[in-house]
Image 1 (tube, helix red, strand yellow):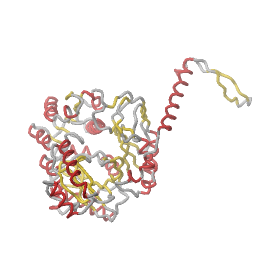
Image 2 (spheres, helix red, strand yellow):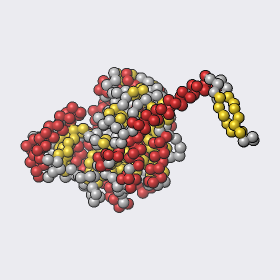
Image 3 (cartoon, one colour):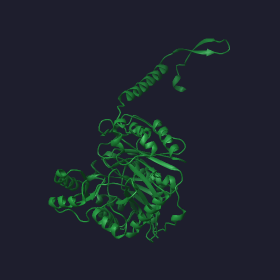
Length: 504
C-alpha cells in the first residue's frame, strides 16, 4: 500500500477547494497551481503551497501537462488529483504522472483512453452485455457513408465526436438535406475541440431522461455503484440541476441499471470514481451513453444521500486500499438537489458575466451546502467556465428538498455580476419540475416562463440596497429626529440617535 502525504490539485475554482477540504480532514498537505488570472483565487489561498504555471489562457497554464509535472516534482507531491475538466480525462497526462513516479488519482491511462474514445467505449459495452443506443461501431469515413448509414438507421440521429464530451462535436439531424452539413460541422468542431475529427452516428432517443450511475472501483477487483443521479435539466447538453433519487426510477429499474453500471466498470477493470451515463426513454428502456472516467460536477448530491465522501474514497483507492463497501449495505437516505450557479445572464442568451463581485451572501441552515470559490471583491476572469458555485440541499422527502432549495436560492445574494440564480428559482417553481414530469427537453418546453425578464425586479433590489446605504451614511453623520411610541403615556416621544451610530 502507498501512503499519500501531499497532493497537487491540477485544477482551479470550486472543485480545487472542495478536494483540498477533504485533504485537510485527512491530514494531507495540498499544492495549488494557478494562472495569471487566478493569483487571488480561493484555491490559491486555501492550499498549503501554490505555484504559478503560466498565462491566463488554460492552454498556456492548466493544460500544460509538463509544467504541472514539474511543479509536482518541485513540491515533492506524492500524487495529483485532476478534479474534472482540464487534464482529468487525458490518458497521456495520467501516463506522464506514472512515468515520473507520481500517483494519478484516477483510472489507468489505458482505461481513460478506451472509455474516452466513444466508439471504443460502445464496443466494450456491447461486449459486456450493456444496452447501447443503436448506431455505428466505427468512425464514419465519408459523407456518402453517413448518408447510407442514416438511411439504414432512420432519422432522427445524432452525429457525435468520438473523442467528444460537453456537447461539443455533436449535431442532431432530423432532415435528410442536413446530413452533409451536420457531418462537416461536427467534424470541424471535434477537430477544434479535441484535435480529432472522428465522428460516429447514433439513433436519436426522443425526449429521454439523462440518468447516470456513480461507480467506485479498487485495484482488487471490487466495484460498487452509489445509485443514480437525474441530470435531465440541461441547456445545450450542459447540466444545470441534478437530483437523487430520480423520480423516474422504480426499485426494479434501479437494480437493473445499477447492475449494468457495475458490469460496465468491471469490463474495463475500472479503478477509482467514475460515472456510467444512460439515456432512458418514456417506456423505461435504457441505453449506455458514455462513461466519465473522473469525478463529476454533481457528485455532492450522491455524497449527501449515501454519506460517503467520494474524494476521500478516490484517495484511499489510489493508495491501494480496499473499498470495504458492500452493495447490499449501501442505501439512499432522503433526497438531494444541486443547482449550478453560473456567472451568466440567463435573460440575454446566457451570455457570460465576468466582473467583480461586490457583495455575496450565501445561504445557511439545516441541509444546505455550498461548494464555491468566490468572495467579495473577487473578480471573475473571462478565461474559464462560468460556474462559480454549486448549491446543494438535502431533506427527508423530495417535496421538502424543493422547498429548501427555494429558500436557499432566495437567501443567495450576489451583486456586481449577473448570475443564474433567478433562472434556477423559476425552475424550482415550474409545475413540470415539481411534479417530476420532465426530461431533457424541459428548458425548451418551458422557455416562455423560464426566460422571464428580471430587469425590473433587479432594479428594485438595487434601489433598496442604495436606499439602505444612504440611510446608513445619513445616520452615521447626522443627528436625525425620530419618534417612538411611549406605551406608558400612550403618546409619541421624541429622541435622537447618537452621532457615533457607527459603534452600534
